Length: 182
Image (cartoon, rainbow, N blue to C red):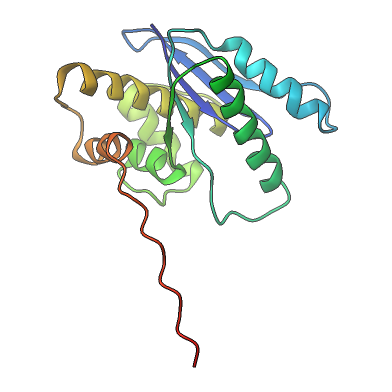
C-alpha cells in the first residue's frame, strides 16, 4: 500500500509514500507540449500511469472562486483526473486547498511560500516545487486518513484532526437563501 497526494495544476505535483511514510516518488508532471487538449490528455495519462491499484489517494479539491487564465485548465484537468481514476475504479478523497494549508500550518489561509518551513518542521520534507510540497501534504493526509479508519483514533495536532474529520464527515451543503426582491 502507498499513500498518494495529487495536486492538479499545469505542473501537477505527485507524491507517493510507503506505509512508513518514506517518499517513494515526488515529482512534478507536465504532460506533453503546451497546446490543449494534447497537453491535458497526456498529463492525465501521465498521472494515472503513476497510480497503483492499492494506493490510498488524496487529491486537492477545486479552488472555487479562483480567478485567472489557468482556472479553466485546472477545472478541466481536475475533472479529467477524477474521471480517469473512477474509470479504473480507484477510490480517492478530496482535500480543499484550505484544508491542505491548515493540515500543514494550522491556518487555512496561509500563502504557499509560508508553507515551506512548517512542512519541513513537521515532516522534514523539502522540494523546490510548491505543487510537489502540496502533494506531499496530501499524501500525509492520506496516511492519517488510513490510520484513523484503521484505529478509530488520532494522535496528530488538533488542527490536523479537524481536517481529517472534515474529510471523513463532510457537512452537508446548505443552499444559500435567495435575497428577497424589494
